[in-house]
Image 1 (tube, rainbow, N blue to C red):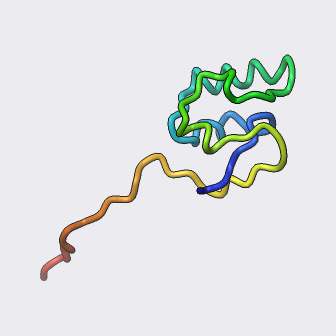
Image 2: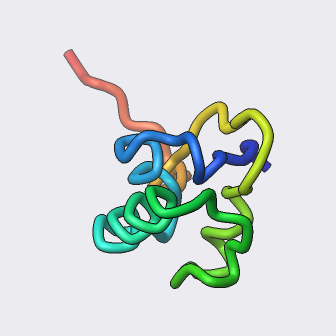
Length: 81
């Protein structure tokens, strides 16, 4: 687990780094939290993978987010002289 990001205080840019979230969902989160703090992630159109990285209270402890997995190479190529 890479930590969780608090949807009530995160910036738009931070929210966009969460796996499985798109700009339309981020805009919905920002709109909803203007009316009142978000207390239920289930009320948002989020995938289970995305919910794993979010929370509704407390400090964000989301250290890093990778959109793409690391690639595993079968062989190592080096430059030849």
